[in-house]
Amino acid sequence: MNGVKTAVLLTILTVILLLVGQAMGGKGGMTVALIFALGINFISYWFSDKIVLAMYRARQINEADNPRLYSLVRSVSQKASLPMPRLYIIPSESPNAFATGRNPDNAAVAVTEGILKALDDDELEGVLSHEFAHIRNRDILIQTIAATIAGAISYLAFMARWAAFFRGGRDDDKGGILGLLAVAILAPIAAVVVQMAISRSREYAADEGAARISHKPLSLANALKKLHAYSRKVPLAAQPATAHLFIVNPLSGRGLASLFSTHPPLEERIKRLEALARRS
Image (tube, rainbow, N blue to C red; front, top):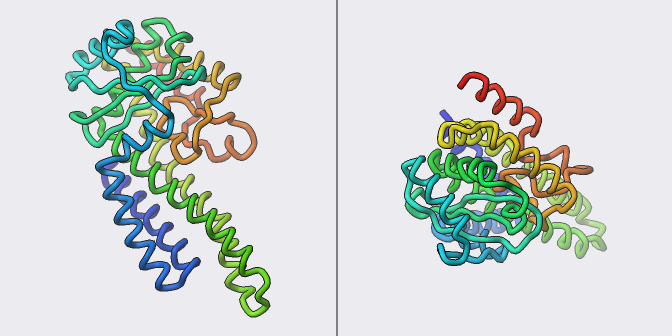
């Protein structure tokens, strides 16, 4: 059922992209947007992990670069019965992590420098188990494609704002200008709402999967508490289109960001993990 739901939601994202193209250039613009959407989906499947990792200046490491992290990831990969992923470190003091890639055999796990300082080994194992749960559930491709398409929608919406500005002097085209402005405002919001629908239920599933992998649900709960507190003090310079990839919301959580958060409420995630600990 999750697969069908996700396919529908990704289709909606693509339709939004086409509607933006139509608003900007009529049928011709819609055709260009369709070609663009097909290209984005192709690039997303094969290269989206590299795009996202490059966006955050993530550096690939081996065991000699960080024996502690490498050892923990190797241990979790064995517990999860999954291949060892590529490991990356993001040069940021804001503690966070995400997984990406098109399948378990081509997965990558990226953590920030800040998370290595903020968490102890048990807590870090809980976070890594969460990312491996995403890999096992094959969320990583879906979430990264959604990020790429949402980013494209945001870019086209930005172009629509400029198109409305340059057409502003034409008295005979007020309807077209209003349409462009509506697209520029509403399309990114619609894209984020679809990302929310994709991401929120999968975060709960990944938390539960992490508890089964590590058998330490409270370690992940403690990690989430720390990450939330640290990230509010030192927010990550993240793109809204990719915010849903991270284990906790990398944005400040204030203003509109709190209304359109791609993550479920942290309190509810912790509550569920504590309930799992009581049952185990």
